[in-house]
Length: 247
Image (cartoon, rainbow, N blue to C red):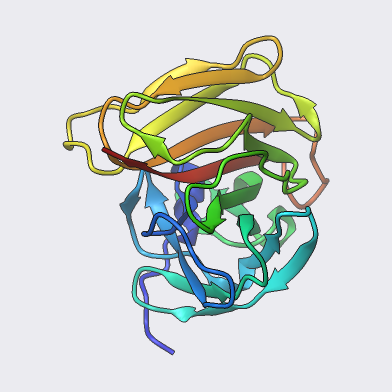
């Protein structure tokens, strides 16, 4: 197992995970590799602990199957699957944990009851996903991952500069009106900010891709009603979706 810099605790400052697929498509019967990375706005910063992660695959028919997560490779976990048919596949990596801030400024990956002087404890659940076309120039419907927070493309196609993508934000199965979605260009200059838009009454938001590159759609949702005495004060949800846009 390779060593890595553990920055799991920085989730409380906004760190999130995302999946990267660095190709336009895969082929049925051939292994497909995706990489889970950790940081903020597609800037890698260490890696989270493997034990908080689980991975699964949603196939073109909506069937789920578990995926194995490889050992850390410095700044990523590799996940491999072999598709048995053509279609749109959706790998998902879910991260679950608790971070507690103490009165003396420590960040501990333990519940509130296990700290002598806790200030705040936050549970987090994150969903990192990507859409993997297996086959050439595929278009159509993307299956839901059934996550408590999800970014679901209304339809899928090979995305090119100038195209407009429409996404729906769903929280616990229902449209999440008013949530803010960020579209991050992973190849942007350091001073270039993400594009931010608020979802409409149906939870929908649209982005036009001005330039080719790798993009990440990101949404957050705080559930202040989800609290467990002695463990955490609220739960923060995050969902990310990795995209390739060509010329």
